[in-house]
Image (cartoon, rainbow, N blue to C red; front, side):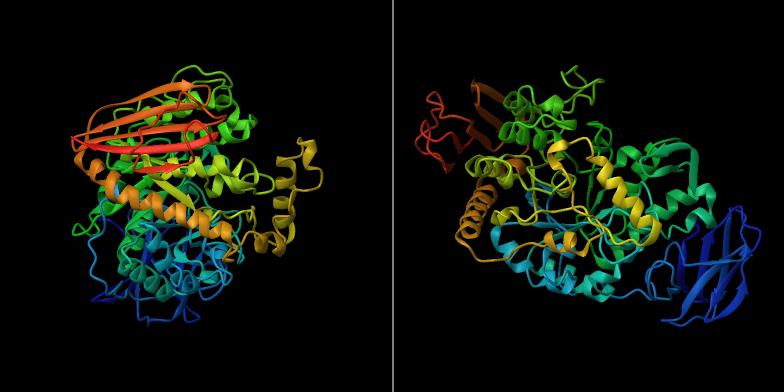
Length: 569
């Protein structure tokens, strides 16, 4: 029988369970009273208690009191008692979801999206995003972490909504309002590690981790353990079911490895979709391996950093770090990305010590989530600069338009739709020795770049967080970018999405015209989509048709230009 994690109501009352296979004694501290728990045969400990909604509780494991690792709600910070909760109706808007081919994803960090940094404030902005043609909101992680500020990737209570963003009811209202606007809501879920403060599973269940394997965050999570697989699957089921979310983006799944990992990922997709078979549930991964396996086994798409890197190198000329292998011929690489999705498919490439990836060109074009900016690509820079601060604005506009009208799934990073130049910096909210370690670690990361001097912002400073907030000023620049976004997404909805839904009929054809220009044609059962792109000096050989249905710039005159047509079959 599958054992649930955390608290759950039944006809018998409220039952609490925790996996602590190596513990000698485990108890429940409910309302200040200690109750011994019963050891189960599979490492779980269980008790059915006379609890009431709102009661506070802790688990006492070999004398140490800890919050529930599957806490749905905390009474305070990550060290505080957990709270007994009941499930509530998730929303009132009739909703069966949307087809993945319709996805235009908008990545959003709740804390910096609005001046208030809350779900309630973000809810008020949803209608404007839907009016642009955006169809999906992807929320950066909301599992509770230590402190108020952070990106969300250092969560330690992944079932519990981070309280700085609001209450569970605020999230329910956010999702319901999004659905009323025709917007899907996708949550970024981190299953590959826990943050550095408040991860009490290390005490409760050391077997949750495999000390023989290491990740950038420490010992790897041991997915060979059935209880570990259940922990994460039940976490996903909770978010999808309790809040009626439309899907998940799974962070860095290339770090979900070891015995049982592939089977876990396959079964995870099946279980999550089974939460509500009456509506569409979408699963997206971040997987730097460029492999087809997950997209052939239940996952809709993978983030495609290759497209970003080619565009970034073409516009900025940067060649450091992971840009090295994309800096030799970025326009040629962009041609590959438009033709096949990924660029690196196992071939030997200059600037890379080992080949990466495998052929993925047979996958549907909707299996690739492309972007020109993301929280990673902006925020992992020392000063958090957006692309508009690094490259010719006309080039950025052309690349952005390409992102929105090409047949791959586009993802916009918050503010990109309005030409934002506010930085998105790395920030956290720790204290004491951990704060100093994070501060020194961030400085050391960029110590070899002499041009930065002392300019790396302090990640623990409140000012660093506040500088990352979007500027919502109504300027000419913002209006021009919003108009471009609206035009491009209207073209996509009217012309590109119907082709995607008809299915691909033949491989794409991409031809290089000059050093910085190309043409591309995609064949679908419903017709063809063709584009002409210039990403450099004016290209006299770039001769798009006069009747282009969508365009940016002037052919043969402007160095950065894009023209797009569709033809019915």
